[in-house]
Length: 457
Image (cartoon, rainbow, N blue to C red; front, side, top):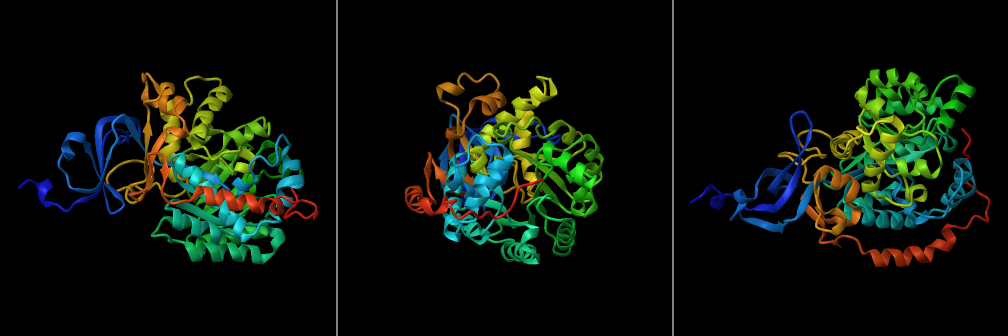
């Protein structure tokens, strides 16, 4: 008898596809006519399609004409804010926060958060996102949604210093309560909002708690150049210097946006004792007319991973990481004045391994971000047979600049199929939309005059 006939059946075999690969120098490549064998939620083998002929498996997927990619990672978002999509348009940052978003967020109930998270997860699964880093309120509900729908997530309960010590304590309690939940698909972080809403005392306390409990920190910092200039004018230091002097840079920290990072910040980021990463969400920067973007090239030169993100749909209007990937490549070319940077293969590297490292899940064993033996089976199948993706002269360029989120046919997390042939299997979208629609009038009411915080950097 052959070995294939005597071994126990695999859980899943995907065959006939091209597979995005990383070599030992992390260069992007593609293995044609390949097969992926999944067992116990992990990739067991990546081989030629012919090698799995006759292999016993609980489930087979014929993926001819498709490309298998590591699942995309949304490295910074506020999933429940899809409920506010399109509510605050064509406004400067300060008015966006103070006049619309923070007044409306004061109305949020736990059920609003849950429904928003369900709708967001449905959107992300359909767009090939298998993991997201979230930073919001009522995060117990978001954790429950992640557990139920099958995604992977890094979750943190956001807090402001205006909440007193209770906010920080609630963030810690959430992180400890949910760390490792959903069969390990949920990891957690402490989540101070930003240096302009969380004072130095609270940031220093957060850093101590992060060390004490082995937790990362996820926060906004140096979101735009105005914040950096305001911090220098008022305090004599940049937001990144605030993170340095409070010890946050000595933790494992994920910094959202960083378009206000300046040259003097780079040595601090390079020497940071912790694992430092930045998440870039370029569509929102364009909408707010910020004149700068995340300095991806400078950060990459000092070894700081830059992951791709969308931010919340209230500012970005979508949770489409494909769009973030294309915009990152195009905006970096324009900013650097160099069409050779950022290439399609570099963009795919940011979307895969660098994003996995940004959320702390880049380990070679048990990690995500590449399709290789020992890594978790978080992957998507992308159909490139449509007229907008043909012909294919350069597969990387086709994926980055021609393919769309709607080209994702199948989404798999931990070896479980969450969407097959565009059919969502774990979320009832019509029912979510119906109930959310009923709740919207109360949610968007601003006649009370409250707001959860004041934006003023």
